[in-house]
Length: 343
Image (tube, rainbow, N blue to C red; front, side, top):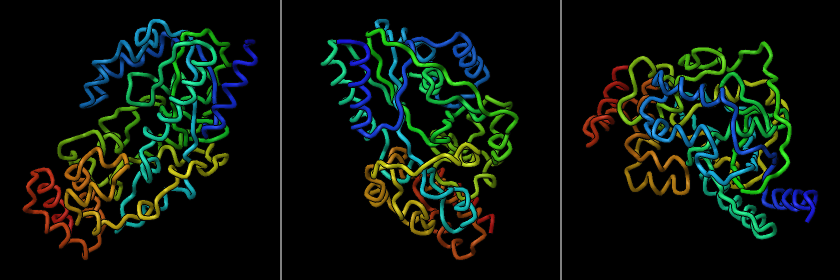
């Protein structure tokens, strides 16, 4: 089978299964990527995410992860929101949930599609393949930039001239030697909108992130009490933060997600803080069934909700916070007391 036919069949499958873009790169990364990762880890900017340090060698080199890999097929799925998410930050009696988490867990959606596309590719070409979506030690964003899907902006996330900042990434590693696409160049120019909007100053410099100051890290990965210095800056963000993504000028080309399971649930676009604070463990699990929010558990989520209540300025929510002063979880109790102190 000719290479043209191999790639044509692959692109048909990619389109059939709802991916919005595809590009190919060799299964290796430039040396500076490993150097940047080492600096990030040496400076302890990964916070409590110990797994990043434990898997650093595999993360920095795809062929350490899988020595037989020759090419990486990078796939992207658009999850663009219907509306700009930034105005939701002003609705203080409601929470703000990151756009990516307003419906089904994207890992489940994308991995199933990736496996089907990869399986068809492997069967037609008698190739070996491995698929990865986010949870494996794979540096998807640098690989996507090498493949030409976009470039890593000053906020370190991938930016696409076609889809802006709203892309989920998945990868198919293969032992086949496929022709690579052209890497994308940086189109950020002098713009620093993403750096300037960050409420916690999580970017020490352009193209550098200190996760320990990032609201996405603090509300999702961080397990203990939220450091006092970041609580007011969190506002009503109760799961993740989209500020640096949403402000990017390249989003003028973005379109709404076509995959129905990635389109926002109405109740998660404008979630009521009083309702969320009233969820016990069983109700939390039911309400967020199939959602990535479920994985952080009720206690960590309630911690975030209580901080949002403290930032709300809504006196009607004071009693909602007071009800959690006797919560079994000490982090929840402390967040409830802090919320009450703000009133």
